[in-house]
Length: 356
Ligand SMILES: Cc1ncc(COP(=O)(O)O)c(C=O)c1O
Image (cartoon, rainbow, N blue to C red; front, side, top):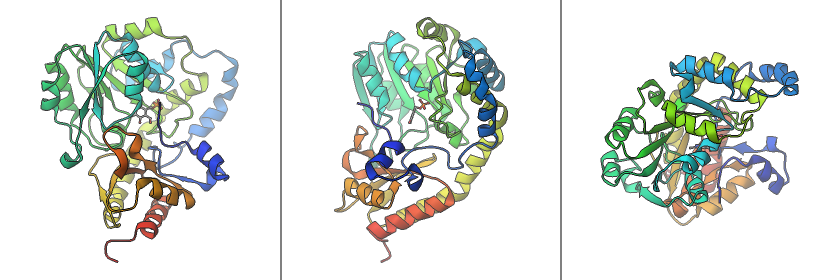
């Protein structure tokens, strides 16, 4: 089964309220809301829904290629990166998957759909969920499809891109899928800027950084021959016309917005984390993303905390569906300053503060 945060429409229905009454700290979207000009651009492109989209999103792919200095036949645009997470186990000739867990649950689901056996490489709370690539390497024999989310969801832990690249180079008989959905929230250099080895795929989602999960737009980047394998498999018109045009707009105008998001996090996150750490029974896992993983000690369960927060119309992510996390973790995504303060206040009211 697939588990996600951010199901705001269903939550509003359950609570009998309007979506606008809810503060969604459960989905890992940009804290800054819509990219300036995007909505206007979408409105002005609406008449284009009378045309078919470009079959392979050619204009969009060319723009992406130009922006990152990559060949256009190394890139494919899709209906969110989800499309590629589910496609890769089907087209790869790997004989097992290795998933660095706890992580995004759809990797496992995608493997299960293709009956690809999965082994977990479990990260530990006691080790702050840091990824030891040497240890991971030592468990690879060749023939694996290795899923690495960087920074990882839900831990927020970032691994240096260069180290992941080196690990891929040192294990040429294993295939690496590196999901950079949350990398634009950091200052870490994307693998897009490196020369890619043949056994590496990169996922780049526009959903999170630009706050457009409802539009569905993501990319996969790899060696030309690898991308060719996808071309043979995919249905035409995988990206709708509005998403194509929005993607083109974001490639042209999204750079400044992205920098603002990173600056916002640099300005507000440390203080938010400190205040979270001052709340009774809450320990923050040090991370480097727009969301924060928290460990809950003591008698109160995360289920109960989740329910009590919902009573205050705040959605947090109960992490009990993540492999290796079980009952004691929840995740909060930073939003605008007002929502962040409201969330802290609600947590303080429910759990109390350590200085009380
Ligand atoms: C790590 C990770 N990868 C991929 C996705 C899917 O994103 P997209 O909207 O690009 O399909 C998500 C969504 O939550 C995610 O957390």
